[in-house]
Image (cartoon, rainbow, N blue to C red):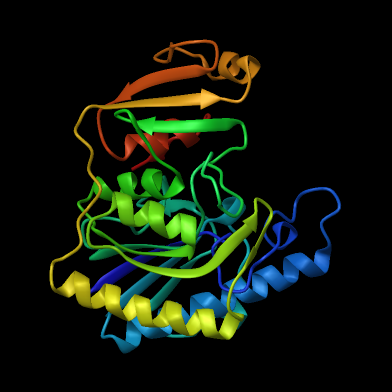
Length: 282
């Protein structure tokens, strides 16, 4: 069995403040960023160890938060069965790829460290890809980053097995992906803060839930996220100026704030979002 872990950071165990994860913002303390990175790496090591202990033969770990670059390879679990991707983009077979290594050979897609979609009440740092986006829809269904990423995995028929984050993120995942196992490791106390058990306790819960997800995959209880093709994608922007900037050939202006386009494959949703002058091949 091969797993692809697509890590974000807002939903990691022990991360409870904005500056621990949105460290590029003015005023964010360098020590807060380092604490966030330490918590991320500890969560990754724990989740990977749980997967290997459950009999998984190969794990791909993709650091995707803010484009990646948050882990230190020298501090990660060293095992020949584990591949670490320091960025969410990379070269595979001579082509620039999003999530290199994700293909039909992968048995399960995992979404640890994630957050709820833009506009979600009672959520810690809810957003979808960009703070300029107020809503993102696939075939009329509002989805967040978990839905966008799972749709990409759905191109290869890879089932979604696990998500970790705050209560709102876990509810979102449970409502979207049949059979998914979730690890709720915190609850929001406001948009920019949350509370939960200590990091070690939350990490143990995450490891237990990863093992449960592996068992569900083996039992065939998880499903890929594959909305009906072709896909209509729509983005409602925060301002008319942002909608102006997003209007280009093949993109329809629906109203003052909303643009819409049609794509032919599940992988093309991510490609439509990120293909800004890059030949990113699915």
